Image (cartoon, rainbow over all chains, first blue to last red; front, side):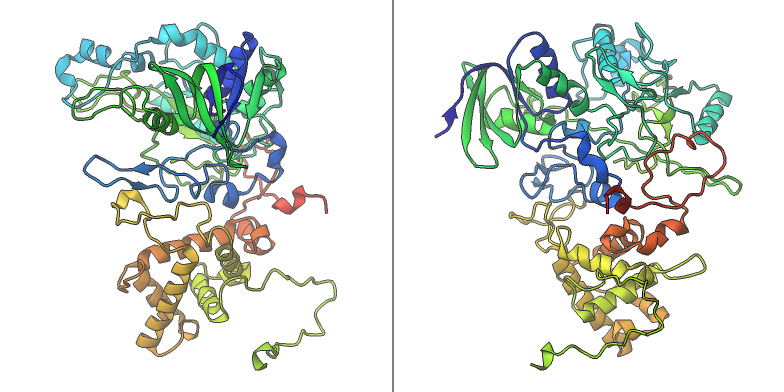
Length: 392
Length: 215
């Protein structure tokens, strides 16, 4: 029998970037928020021994322990779904701060085209450009509507960058100048310019300078140690929820963070969520946490699973195209890597940061003509001085 | 009782300077001696000593692999190892029942069998060209095994050899950071702000994680 806890205004399922931002903003607005995180607590002091590629990069220290819980997956509905036994392509976050702790900090804005991909594609190329079965759609919100929030996040996290010459309109510059420019970045940048492309410094959540954000959070500058993706930052220089939004929420006295709390079910009545049922994984005890607002911020897999298991919302049916729960999963991919070798140059590539780089958007979004191409959209092309960066 | 009596080992040379410390880490946690000698010979072929510096054996890679097999990695401790077991698509990754250490048990026995059958000698006693031929036969699945994939085992062995060469020396490989020194990799420095923008390659004495604890 689950213990029923007193009702709160908001319960947040999963305390990473999404949950942390919601907790911070809503507690500042005076609401009481409970944060349920299935993993353990994390702090900057945990990372004295973080410069360990074997433990963190190759043995997946910071990710979900798959022996306890995993997902099943398949390429299409004709294949039998099988458990993901070990890590391959996608890395599932776990613990306070979630994937936001072990990211590279590459903090791009979406392009205006991305928000209205369907209508803008049809507008420029006609209906025939979108083949049958391609399920793309407009987001329902536009870049201009989201712009103030992009900026707010950039100020909260302390993004170092320079304006993307082919990106959406910005109301302000980045709060911090770009990170340092390495010789290899300079070469990439100069080559791009000689080809008439538009290079710009990659927007980075690693601070180029010491920074105090609008919430009064002070953080130190990046030391270019080279351990970013799959690692926590021992300086707090890389923005993550633990060093930015979570302390702001905690300081209000309105945020009740419970780690080791695995949400199993969304409680609902008449199609409206009324709270969650969760297990304290250290004791096995079950609790019910009623709330006026239930926020799912536990990554798309867990959010979808919770909705399906709780029978809330309409599951996506691929044969009829109806329903939304579980529709259109997308993951970032980085493909087509190129490597240069030089007989007469040696680079200090052991140093760097995961989002210390230069990139171009000349072949991204609809920044080039797709009339005679059999695809839409494109990709950002970048050089990063990421050192021990592992990209999947 | 005979098994309990310590086999005669090479006496420590009196010429050894007293200051030279003994590496107590160099003993076995999982592998048998016979298995260990196979791993030692095989990893030395994958990462041989040459003009650049030491090979896998001198770097401690065989101990690294033994210790890894004895721990979480060898038991797939953070991987999902419960039923249901079905043969999956290639894109669905490993779907077997065996743990890494069990795969090593089988594969090392198969390497020994293959060597005995083809050359009438144990793997460790083969000429290096013959050892290479055995490894190649596993790498290319020329060896047909029923319980495990020979090529997948080779891939794991190759990967763990590289890990043993380049992982922090705390794990028993990369002895004296010699793996890093060969590549001019500075290991675990705290900051590169001074050199990040400079053109000239900066060679520095590597530092390991040991420096991050007060001793």
